[in-house]
Length: 137
Image 1 (cartoon, helix red, strand yellow):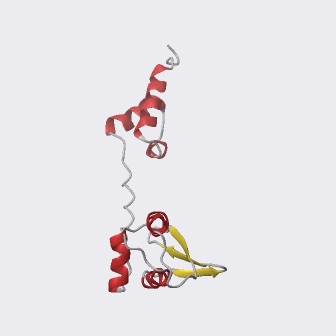
Image 2 (cartoon, helix red, strand yellow):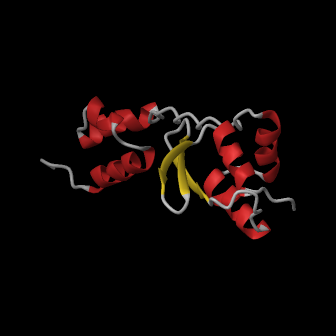
């Protein structure tokens, strides 16, 4: 496995749109992804020294969230690595009509109360309503 020098690593960070956060004995960088996740990494000031293969693999998987091929592609093309867009929120599911009507009739819930329930909770409430003794009998 070829590993980058720290200078190449800094060049990658520049092309992949990382922002320098602070500098101490190392330089610290952040990148905010489209889903709001913030990635953080830091770079040694060792210049032309290369990092060990183990360190490079750990940085790729834990900090950059990229494959080795994607890392080298950014350096080759000088274009930021594409990252997957966040998955869309699942559409809210509605309860089956029979369940919603039974909750209105047997548990006395209104439509707003029913809309807040997931199907498991709705079924549980219906069982509870059906197990209570009927009033006036």
